[in-house]
Length: 608
Image (cartoon, rainbow, N blue to C red; front, side, top):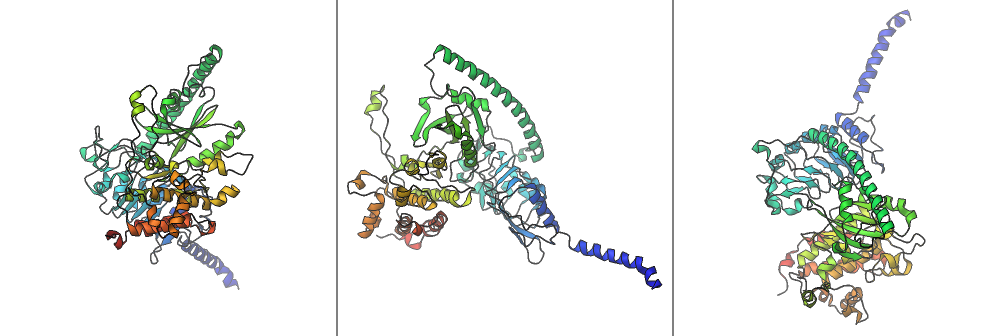
């Protein structure tokens, strides 16, 4: 016994050593520590991080994570559409065996970490649909295995690094819908991509977008170094402080001027003021979403004060639309909504904040709004292609009473859309609506899908507009919004009876839209009304006669029989009188991509 007691300290020391070794063996791997740093940098509300535990040996069983079976190194990190909010931390660069990083559709902000360039095994990088700002790091040129790079629909600035031109394996590249400027590198792999990879940026130029560079920035090969991400961030922070101070001072000045202007107007009875000048006085403010509107508040207010009837470019059930042209040449669309209930301002602002966070390449981007005493002025991207309604149907030309020649000149019919363009518009509208139904948070029921709410960019790419406005403007005293929200001819039968909007009522309206695009006539065209039908009734009649192909616009060129049959089958499912028989919009997109977009061999051997 005495011997044992004398040896006990050594025995206890041995146990301590064993405990430390065992504890060390259970320490989280380096990849796991990098992911924990990512978890701490962002917030999340859908529970994806619940099983991310620091006491685990490795992260291979964590949600959204996949490891190599042998090395236990992380190779996939897939956290798309997971309500992540926060910056991407530099520790992400420690995942140097990563092959796929998928973070799209979240609310990530801040700069792109240059450390991502350490992930040299990366093959797919998806970061679209966030609020990432700053510059594209030149270190991304070290991602030599990269095949897909999607940075679209963010708020990135500066030029596209010349180093990206050296990514020889790049087969998919998209930086559209940002604020990029300067010359697009064209000596390497980026020369293989067309305008769709770059649309929606400010002052980009290059042969890919058929724009000659007038004051092109020198590339690094010319001896001029692009600013580093660190320097850019410091400069951006300094500018932000200066801009904030200047904006506050400008707002005070504008408020004082507006007050004085309103006093003069009230006391001296000026009645020759046009545009927004009067209603902007006394407390107007501009709210910008995620830096999406790169102008000082005073510059926007100054422009709004000078706008009048000559700026009107359209009108609809939700308000008048104006063209807002800034001094730098950028153009936006301004939708004016007259306030009906001052007590709902706080609700209105909160809902607009939600709508401003919804980003998708097939949705019209809400950049911000001006809150004036008598109306809300919503600021959207301006799309030069106009509305689908204006393209499909001959618009009524408004004559100028002061111009006899204008009165005598009849409206010229628009050039009919060819088959491929119509299919592309249908697919774009479907993707935008599917995102609203299934992928954005909270999910949104549009309630007013129609051709005038499908806008087109210069390449005839479809953007769904006015989403969320029907719910936003409904009568708070009544739950029935059918007649106010919807448009006759597009409404599902059960929607007209109950006034209850669901995803399936949107699907029905989309089916009507498909028929309208195929046929070229409005759903309630006079030729249908004469037969006591609308476009859906006319389709059903043709189906009964086994003549459904006759619904296609005879002026449409390039119609493919197999594709047409698949599209008509899809449209018939969407406009079924039974809601439960209609497909979801996700399913609609799948059917379009598999049965309609993918060419069949028989498509190229049409009936002779």
